[in-house]
Length: 302
Image (cartoon, rainbow, N blue to C red):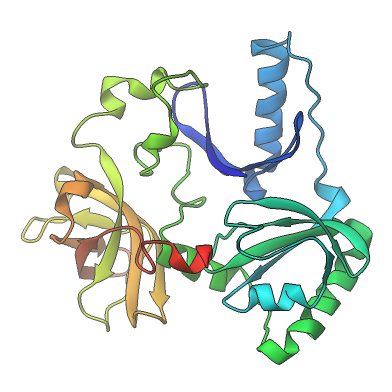
């Protein structure tokens, strides 16, 4: 499997997701849930208008599969109780691998992906078995302290890990803005590559993704707050960026956030203010790397 970013023709990011190779000429693509329809429309546009000569069929299979994320340091142990066909060891199924497996007698797929930043898998089975899969996972995981987690917990985990999502991929950001510029090859073409190199989109002072850490653990960060230099008035002329996602990190014990800041990569360790006039908040922050926890990715590769 590979993580990828899809650009619009104007060079701005449309969506991110993964592409997994099931066979020499058969692939499965995942997108963010909210953008699935737009991505499908874009793929059909590319096929019908840009490359009509390609012999390719694009099919939506979302409703055919039930897919459940199993994450955490004991996730392999839980799956080991249920997988009856296929090797899920780290050597056989490393990070970003995909395998067709048998799970409690049902043919399924196992994706070694992690949006949470932890050791994690996504288990896919035909949709009719989705409810049963959830039940056997919870039963098998009881001895390991398994618990369901929702999107609020996932949002905290992905911010701690510096993973971008909808608030960052909002139609106004490029791969470079998102810290994903290396995904856009300079040796081969892709949709949006040329337009993404327009002078304004590669300007030195264009806001870049950074992490933000509240200096006082008692202070609360706000998504949508504007980034203002210390000592500068909180007016548009002094606006240097915006906070896109925030969370209180239980691991770190204080509020953290992701945002876009002018010359952000050059200002790691500097001070900035997150000013939210609507909520009367002016929070002193430190500019940090966007990956707050496990920057080397040792957990998800373990």
